[in-house]
Length: 433
Image (cartoon, rainbow, N blue to C red; front, side, top):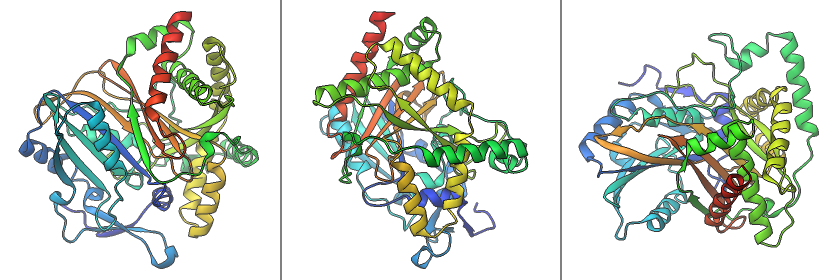
């Protein structure tokens, strides 16, 4: 049943994410779920109707104003049909390569904003089972919330998706959210102002291959599952967190990739989302985007993994003491109510201060079932908007970790090479342990 409000403005932050969308830089989140058995069409549709379609945004489209002079708004689809968002496809030749090609095709499809900006594709013929590819535009919610919503499709839903073990939440007064609480706290307001000026003063990233002009053609790849216990052992050995180890390994993978392509491994910044949703705020599909961003320098100029890890820990420690994430949330909120040309201009300026988007999420510790089929593995891809050409997504699920890369063909044409570099870097960590 639809809510009584047939129209509503997008929140300022959601509107900002909607405005990031363009042909070269789609602002969508893509999730791949792999199942042991074929998915039953009837049971899956029933789960979608029960857990997704009861959330108004999954029945609403986004309508922008003339020349984007007013904020975009949600509007009910008058002719909503699940069939317009749901389809099946069968691989003629199963296997990761064929599946990767199909997911790449899906990622490169333009989003139909005449309808609610989401879709589900069931892929049959993936080994002995099926795959489910979910694509949701970022204006509907952030990755933390969207993954939680998609996992609600499980036969026994577990609301356990969240940020990595390094933390990421900040305290918030009930019902106000981080930003509203900060505006009433003088000390925090001073810290936010300082963080904002530090962000403004942050220099642009160096002109590495990651700063090439995107072509608009996206490519994807994902790693084999890495046992989570193995990563935890490495973290304990170096007095670090799981997130620290994975970020250091990612930096090492980028270093290897640049060296293999004859480029000097120059440090650059990763733009990392930080969950700012209050702990008691439900991720019910109506909460939208509640995250800020931090700019974390990846020390690609450091060869020894342990030294690189220590450098990253120091940098992360400094950032955690600042209010950088909350300041960026405030910037996005302000841009969402600004004229379109101001929004695009400021977004472009801040995007030049980083070179890669990196997201780390913690999924359920135990395997789930959807429509009676066991969800064996999963991974996801974040967007890399505003002229960026590479995104890395880290997700733990059922005792393992996968890293997925989404790149622009003009920036990194072979993301599978990054996957191999990451595998070799983790082996190097093992060797020095």
